[in-house]
Image (cartoon, rainbow over all chains, first blue to last red; front, side, top):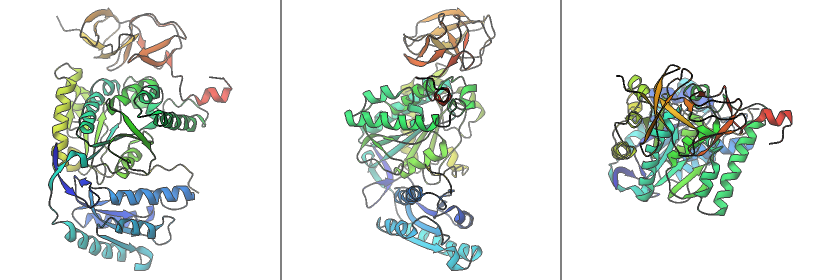
Length: 386
Length: 105
């Protein structure tokens, strides 16, 4: 199985070829937005971190920004630094240069402020766009492809329709030699025993138990029932009563293959096949975690209608609820609700999604991309803002 | 006659089914299992789209089972055909409130 991708020096292949305009800290976001508005092929990596955080979190943000620049959908990077942030911008720049992709860096304080930085940033972004815009797509085997998967704004159709469809496609991608990442550790609670049975070995099984215990303990430490936080009020209105019910429906999207290992939030899979990323359930941090893990594309299942996209990674929306699809068909790419109504089988919709995945990986635009719903991101931190 | 709304029983061990339709108390629904065989039953409450109904009586404290797995415990006795949701089942996971009260689980 092949798609038309941008082959990168590390052997990975991109579904897109963007200039990532990367604020090293929240304070650079305004400049980044102005640069992106005035250029083509650019995407801003708008986040709200990078200063006044504990050292482990600052390390974490630096690692995440490096990994976004390394993502195969990024052809070049422009780092927009304020000048006094906690993120290690020297390490960020050095790591991005090591990828062999073009990199530029500007410093707002040194350039004389916001307007001067916007001008210098547009010039720098223009140079990067011109440097990579001539790159051509070529046929690439799916073994060079990484897919992220996610479910959001779930209801009870997610577990019977849209998540089984993603599970079907995840199995196909793994069988074709590709890589699949799934996360949302919170939504393993009550279903971890099933995932453990699919672990490659004892060590991976115990890693799964560890991340679930840590996530549950973090929620319990607040001293309340986590219901309403997870499952969310929307999940509950949709008929999901408990985290266990949500989890059992959620893990279906990981398919049936062996779980090769567990990776941390800032890590990418260490090999091919199916991997778990320790990550929370909320969309913005989860989608970012998938991009950090090197995802070319994300399959996103929903029941109530989650519209989120991501700056540099196309997100295909698969809707399990036929009523939601009818209401939100300009956000939802695939109507898996036809499974609930008995008009189509999981396999039929699965094959449709697999075909769409190859087209989108080769350049076709998703509904969310076409209306620029692509800015929902932030990074998941563990410590406080200080 | 109008076609009955459908509920899906995901696993043979389940004591609840998920209704993909919206019905009023007293309505008849068709409960389909994985193999496609169906039984009819009467619901006792108004049930919103995507919500669960009890397939058999569930005692207070008994496990509620969907996908063949525990999804919570009943906090009240539930009769067959009743709406099963947050008002009559509780999660046993993520219960920081139990830890606070010092309940050992």
